[in-house]
Image (cartoon, rainbow, N blue to C red):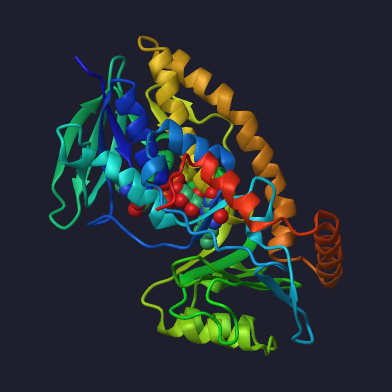
Length: 404
Ligand SMILES: Cc1cc2nc3c(=O)[nH]c(=O)nc-3n(C[C@H](O)[C@H](O)[C@H](O)COP(=O)(O)OP(=O)(O)OC[C@H]3O[C@@H](n4cnc5c(N)ncnc54)[C@H](O)[C@@H]3O)c2cc1C
């Protein structure tokens, strides 16, 4: 008999875990709160560990990457307080040469594997379904599931429950306790969305950075897609940010930054069909599993966007979970111990560096802003400019020729 696992959440972590479980000989069933699979999303930089996990999960060949060709002088620009634009180090210039994708690109590649290309290997996915109670027995875990719309409830037993339901995970709340016990507050907000058009006077795939004390605007250029935008700011009053109109709130936060880039981004936000607006947190847990329940991805360790490692770690976490279950087929506790022991150092390291990276995204003060500018200018001069062919070649190799 194949063991059955309930995977809660059809995001990167949930689908990665489901593929990992299938490969370990388990039968996963995914439940997703939304009525259908989401698409699109914001810019994501995928680092080597994430690209390796994509290979391990067998999805690398389906992963569409969108790195713009680098011109001499770079295609990332920073705009200073006088409105002057200068070549700058962008997100993609970080060590590890991240692959540029949209979150939806990763999810689409995973989805192709989940559906088994229409074969009988397809994973069962139930939309508009959420867990409302989880009860552990000695040999199984009983889950009370609810169907949205009808409100119909039914019980089902599984050998394992995988909570991959994001930063505000219901599985974590039901099994481990309230959000306040695990969400650390970063006194910062983000708004991410897709631009319909590039900022006028910039090349289509240019990236633009305006990082001021406590507020920043980033435009992430992509090779074959309109850029995505990120507005981020620091605030001491998170609750207040969720009251009233979001667009008005953002206009007021970014007022005084009278730059054509900021104007274009704010005007575009008003017309955007959807956007993500949220507070920034990190999830800190002393242990990611208990008995037959395990958390993966943002539900377990959300590092937040500043780390740039959320998607990477979700892929890696899911792939590693499958590998651990394969290695310990008859001992779930040993598998979960081995999985956490292997993954924890990587997560801890990137949770720590996220604070420093936050200063790169949105400096905390005028001093930090000036320091950031000097530091990045220096690094840029020391590194010089790497020829595009070299960088592109390495990425293509890492993805085993996966760019479509
Ligand atoms: C603006 C921004 C930029 C980012 N940039 C990067 C980057 O450059 N590099 C990087 O690696 N990462 C980045 N990240 C982080 C990355 O996107 C996330 O870490 C990753 O997508 C998390 O995946 P997940 O599957 O854990 O959670 P989620 O994406 O939150 O997915 C959770 C899923 O569970 C579902 N769900 C929720 N509750 C329930 C429930 N009760 N029942 C059933 N289903 C439920 C949700 O509908 C959703 O489908 C960024 C994040 C943001 C916001």
